[in-house]
Length: 141
Image (cartoon, rainbow, N blue to C red; front, side, top):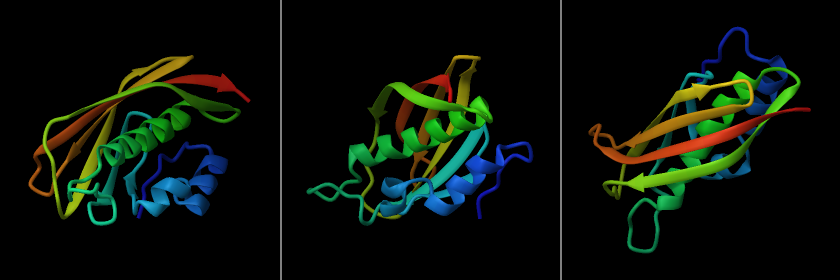
C-alpha cells in the first residue's frame, strides 16, 4: 500500500491510484511504497524485466528512477502545476538476475521552477545496483 503526504493534491493521488503510476510502470510490476516530494520508495521484480542475457535491463533501472523522480517532482509542483523531465542519467554499478530491486529517491533540489532527484536502486541484499539523477522543469497548467 502506497503512503502519500497528507497535503498532496487529491487529483494527483487519484491519477496515481487509478493508473498505477502509468502504463509502463504497471507493465513492469512497479509497486510504489512511499511517495513525497523529498523521499519516495518503490520496488520492482527482476523477473519480466530482464534483457536477453538474463540481467535486469538497464532501461528498467532508468524507468524506475524516472517514475520516482517525476512523481516526486509533481508532488512538489502542487496543484495547477506539472513536472516535465529535462535531463536524466544513470550509472550502473552492479547487475542482478533474480529477486526484487528497491529504489529510494531523494530530492537534491526542490526549487520553484526546477527539481533534481537522485534515485539509488538496490538488490535484495542492499547492494547498490545503479544511481539515477533526474532534473524536472515545473510548469503551470
